[in-house]
Length: 397
Image 1 (cartoon, rainbow, N blue to C red):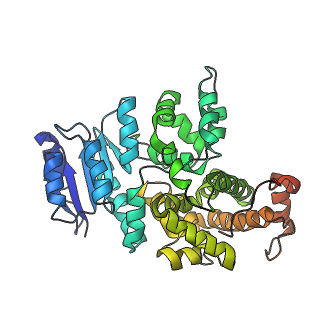
Image 2 (cartoon, helix red, strand yellow; image 1 turned 90 degrees about the vertical axis):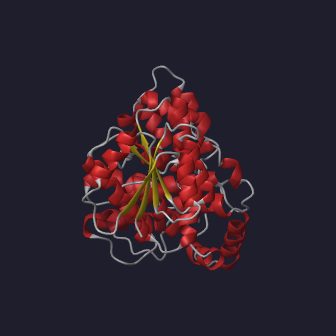
Image 3 (cartoon, one colour; image 1 turned 90 degrees about the horizontal axis):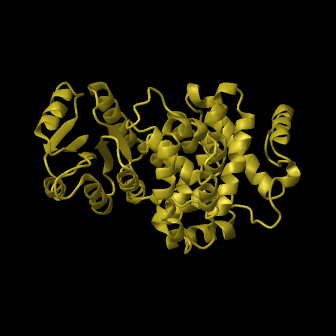
């Protein structure tokens, strides 16, 4: 366990890595190679938990290496060691790397990233979850998001607030943005949990490169064959849950965390739609016919659920712990850890209230809401407009 492969063509860089990990925790087993081909040769015969690679390698570069690992060894976590990238390099890197570590790095940053990446493994012992997440090159966004975003960003006087509002309405794009900004590539001393914060730190120039060149939209067509699944419908549900969670959280300082966690709580559905495709259609149809909880049907039909996949995806991508825990527990009656309890409870209640609103239940039958909670929901969202009449409600998810 904890087998780590480093790939860098610069012998001095490899020596620095070795020196940084001389006193590594017990159980870490690093291996060092100088080329992508040498890495592939090793991977053909040995198991590794994570691969760290430099981008600019001779011959096959780091992005191509990570793409091959994505296809051939999807369970392995892929990390890119990179200096500031050009826009075309950024586009390629985002589609294959699950995390980034900026060069030059320091020992503390490197070790912290290793601890975080290796810490994602215990979240699941299901190899299917790791494979589904590992094979993802991108998540499908709603078809309406891209043209809206292009239109806003094409305006010379576009503001961060305007751009953030469009991004924050889309779970897939929000997740990708938070993945990039929370990577060590930006070297921030804390986790960013809100889209406006992420946009501010990334900057409009880099954001344009990310959004306009990224392959985050390329997987949208892969969901067209998933009968019963709609990225647009999921987007509306996720945004409703995000708004309700923000209104229900108790501590004002936790509102951004609650909004983000609510927006991303069902992101595992996007991953399953891309990774399981027609098999996911069968699960969706059965859940609709049987009226059983979708997560229960998913586990029965597929061997895992959108809850498990979503939590692991968020963890591997380096999203804040509070977001990961809220995704993992949004159907679970178990108690969250103390620092995250307020947000987890708010998301859990918000998604249940959102389901009620989507099926036209404005009295929230079956939900034990206090008067204050009802007032907060009413204040955040007009019940008359809670669900457009021409849209189908989501399944109970």
